Amino acid sequence: MHKTSPQPNWYDPWVGRFLRLAASGWVPASWFRKPLPPEGERAARTGVLDIEIVSHCWQYAHFLVYQLSSLALYPPTRATVTMTVYYNGEDEKTRALLDFFSRQQVPGVTWNWCELPKESLFRRAIGRNEAALNSRADWVWFTDCDLLFRDGCLDGLSDALQGRRDALVFPASERITTLLADDDPMFNFDPEQLRLADIDDSRFVEQQRTRATGPLQITHGDVARAAGYCDSLGYYQKPAEKWCKAHEDRAFRWLLGTRGMPLDIPGVYRIRHISKGRYTGSEFSTRIRSGVRKATSEH
Image 1 (cartoon, rainbow, N blue to C red):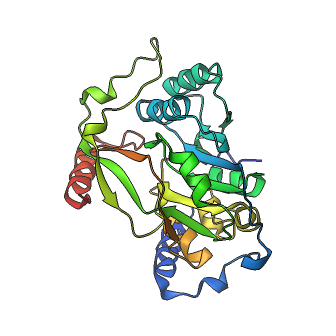
Image 2: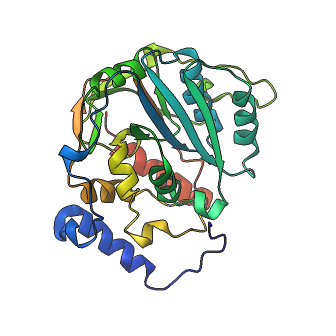
């Protein structure tokens, strides 16, 4: 059962700092790691693979519409997909969007909406951990709602995963936008006039990836069921009062003992946004965060 009233503790910030240092390599992961199935004992699936995609959405329906549309517009033929989205019903735009897609019949795709209390949604590892422990899929793709699976993506992923037993893989490249402003026409979203939405491909440029970052973490199903998503790190399984920065992405790689194996997977697109609508705070602090994002963004 999910906790709905997190109780802050004075030592929580120190635990968070310690875990960030630990995940940087200062502490052996074996101190915290749950036992993983040896590579030779993991299933080496072939044929039509079953893939579960796990996404979160809070006040990002204008991104999620493109992600879900990409599955409807470019459905898989050599894989079956369960699209799991964690959300909270107080986010009315996301709820309306999920209702719309519930009525879209897409071959090879099963929609799976999971509502969480806001406090559990705000700690992204909670939903990811729940999905990992309970997934029946051959592979689990942990992602964010700004990632798109366009032409050939999931079939290419299925082809690349044939017979593999890696704990963690990721796309060797993705196509990304520049940091888009709030008033960019791409973000015109009207919950009263919902439809499938596709992007302008010319606005995206290719970028190489060197590790399995938060939206690009694809985990073997046997590993996911055994380890969960930072299941052994209680700090990352605690509900929170506001959206938390996803430091657990690095902790997840640390616990698995790998940066991930890069694979050639086509059709991976990511929309980037200069401001973060899911965070709360003053207008001044929002401007500061946006400035930092712009200054530190990879191009």
